[in-house]
Image 1 (spheres, rainbow, N blue to C red):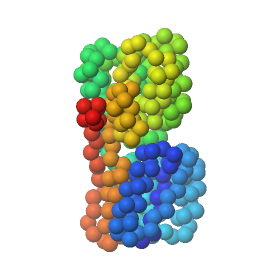
Image 2 (cartoon, rainbow, N blue to C red):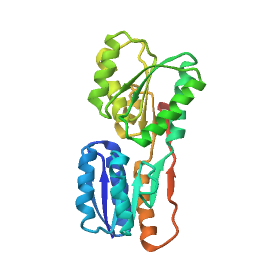
Image 3 (cartoon, rainbow, N blue to C red):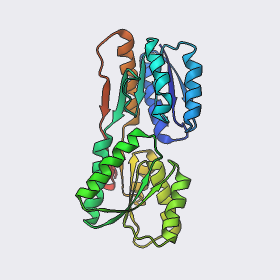
Length: 273
């Protein structure tokens, strides 16, 4: 089976790990895999999918940059009888199945970690991903709700652009404006690492608690170096593998789950050392 995988950006370590899982499981099953990086552009991703869809591929995996942008095309692909599975975002009615991580639980655990370490009334900066990322929206919703329950104060919400440079600049700007905060939660580790860079550069005392999301290797190392405090680890390699397993079942006419959830885990220094 020839599998075409459309993903947001291969410069992002998370997507590299998802791709690795797809390739590993594809190799085990003797499937051919080709990946397409959209460079974080929903327009690029749509064009890439249109090009491949016209060739009647065997199977498609997609991690949307923006769900709404590709939904109609995904429906066309389904109607042609081509198996299509979404990875990391839950899509309804336009794919056969979705493989996601436990984003709601992850957001709750991030807030609980901050609450346990700083207590009620603590001031938090929330670095969010751009609109259109349903997975980030889920962790955002549960994080905000848990902060309210624990009486944690989100004093500033900034958009980190899903990149390291932007989040660093935004945090440095907050420091320049003398905004008071004791913790930062970033909706992915790339943005959290931008926060780490800003803190290293400005060296505030005390250092704010920094919590990220994804569990990428550089974030783990920064936790071990005590420059970051925690990350909610997804299991991207496993997500890629489960997506290929699901495609295989669809292609063979076997029973399959249309919603597969891969659990998350909060990683801290004590767990990683």
